[in-house]
Image 1 (cartoon, one colour):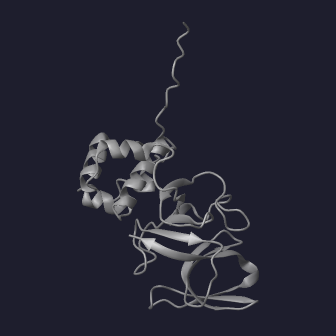
Image 2 (image 1 turned 180 degrees about the horizontal axis):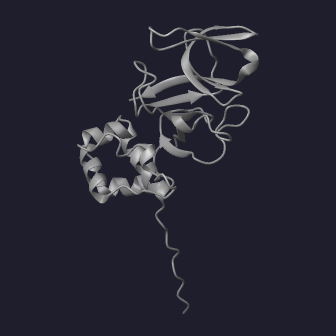
Length: 216
C-alpha cells in the first residue's frame, strides 16, 4: 500500500494580519481600536508596524494576539478559522497606508489598486472595486484620526458635499470635501475650517473617488 503524504499548509505573514483585521472588523473596530481595547499600544496592529523599515516582515506576538482575542471576546479556534484563506464573509478589500498612496504604481489610470504594498482588510462592501486607506498622522483632523480606515469607491457617483480622495497627475493625494466641480476646475474644501479651500485644474487631476465611510 502506498502512503500519500498530505500537503502541509504554511501560515503566511499576510494571513495572520488579515485574520487580525477580520477579528477587529467583527468586533466593530479598526486595528488600532482593537489594540486599544486590548490594552496595547494603539499602533500595535497598524499597517506601518507590519513591515520593518528595511523591508523585513514583522509578526504579531502571541501575547498581543491573546490579548486581542480576549478584547474581542473570541477564541483561538475562531481565530484559526479567520486565518483560513476562505474565512470571513468574502468582503476583504485592498488596504494601503495613506503615506504610500502617492507612490508611483500604487494605482492604475482608473484609480484602482495596482502594484506592491497592498494588503487586505475586512470591511463591509458589495462593491468589488472599493479599497481602503489607513490614515496616518493628524493632518486630516477633525474628520479623520491616525489609524482610521476610509473606504473609497472609484465607481460611486460624486456630488457636491461628498468627501473625496483626489490623485493629481503629479502624484499628490488629497482628501477633502468636494465643493464645486466643472469641466475646467475642481474646488475642494479642507476639513479644518481655519484653512482655505483649494482649486485645481481639471487637467491636473488623474482621478477622483468618493469616500463611502470610515471606521475608527
